[in-house]
Image 1 (cartoon, rainbow, N blue to C red):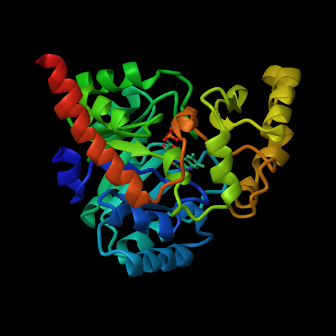
Image 2: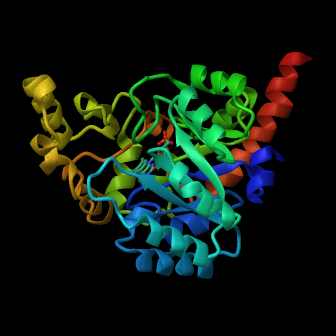
Image 3: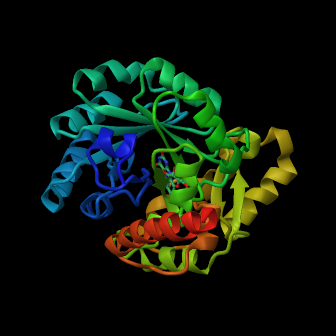
Length: 324
Ligand SMILES: Cc1cc2nc3c(=O)[nH]c(=O)nc-3n(C[C@H](O)[C@H](O)[C@H](O)COP(=O)(O)O)c2cc1C
């Protein structure tokens, strides 16, 4: 397949692995890139810019294909050392950055000067147009189904993707709820130039996370995610568990008076405990509704090959067959 996204990023297949806290390590990024997609290392999982530089170098030892780095701009008082992280990206020769969270305008000139392509993750057409306006090269359009932060507008991809296609000139990939060939072909039909997957890539042999996490995704259905932190306008879609139930109880009890401090135990410092130690009830961790479509734990290579082969069959047999 050749799309504006494969051309822009110099990759074989129009499939991107979204940045994921404590999942987007060198091993997963390299596996996705080696299989022909774009693997992405998550910058903020690395404790310092020096650690990110080492992670990029480690990834380079595992692949000579293009890789990307995710930079998430968090709504926090004490900002991480973004200039330092960006310096590690530049020095590491990384040519694609996936930005998410706040508007990345402040950092665009520096990234552009260094010939780095920027794909910004957006959950609304309004934000996607803003990203296009400030000079992002592409956007990742993240629907309400997505694992992680779906924003506050709740527009599912069946509407959001064609709306993005109506408005945008720069290429975009679909994100949220994507799992297989059906997702890719539908995304292309709705005007996207590729797709981004998060949750699906966690349930692969190459994802360097605890086996419990993969089994939890396998066991989950599309009914098992919850939205937390909605009253704080920082909505996150997570897999339900005891900690999540506790958060939801507190949200109900405290209503509009709830503060971040009230749920800090259930959301802060949770990722290493869940992803590395396999403590599944440690707290709230992002997971998409797409868990309902995940029924196995293949290698990344097997997953990508399957998606590409079945996409071809879908287009050539099913869709062309319907026309005939
Ligand atoms: C466990 C997990 C952690 C994530 N962490 C981040 C992150 O740190 N930064 C970010 O921009 N997106 C993050 N995301 C969102 C993904 O990059 C992607 O947009 C999302 O998973 C797409 O939805 P899907 O899970 O339905 O495929 C995370 C998602 C998951 C499942």
